[in-house]
Figure 1 (cartoon, rainbow, N blue to C red):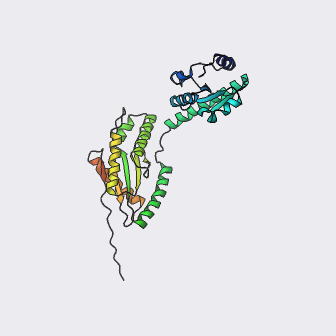
Figure 2 (cartoon, helix red, strand yellow):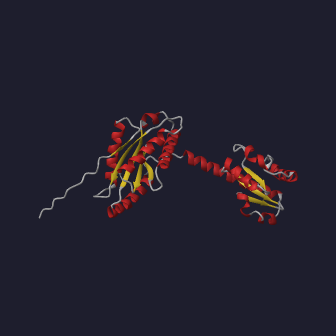
Figure 3 (cartoon, helix red, strand yellow):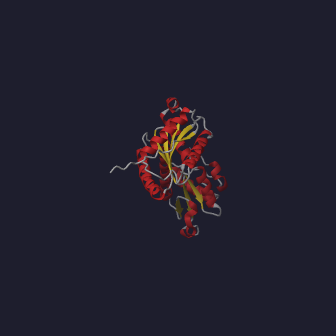
Length: 291
């Protein structure tokens, strides 16, 4: 409760504590420092000058906390468009059931938001990445047509964790999922906005790089290796990357790009890992006409 007025604090405590909501009253400037996500399920901020900053500070500490703005009457509420950035409002004259009911709803919303966040953090990656891979294949089909029509280059990288099997055997399922989720985030953060990175198998990701020739694809792959190598974490990881490119001439398919990238990836691992290797140039097929 970020409220300076003692009469308001007393009135709200009288309404909330019988309903099972013990209240901590703090000065607005101390609210964020005193917030404890393990104890506090909602916050009430009295509308006043600087109250919007108090709401923002509370949200910075706990983005899932439900914050209510308290107004004495509707006229005062109309003077604060956007309700200070709060999730809800309490507008006087207030009754005990109104206060208790609104705060009970706020507590349920906070609990639901925290459960959802916890579920998102612990959800394992799908081993096959089928949905994302299907999207990538459709996108690749579009990019291949563009490449053929306009002679635009295209590159594909296959990223794999070095020594994943012995490492995975030492980790609990949730820890493995966390490592792979972190890897996905690192790879996505290392590529450009126009690139697409999706899971390919448990410890592998595939990166589609439109408008990218072989040298550009290798540069992106090296950046991925460096980003993973230099991350600060208790479990050290490195990756190897194989890059296959289509320079906009001849035929190309998803299967052929992946095959060439996989061959380059095998070369990177054979050379010691933690490196990017480009595939051999695509062989040109000469046609013979008989007739």
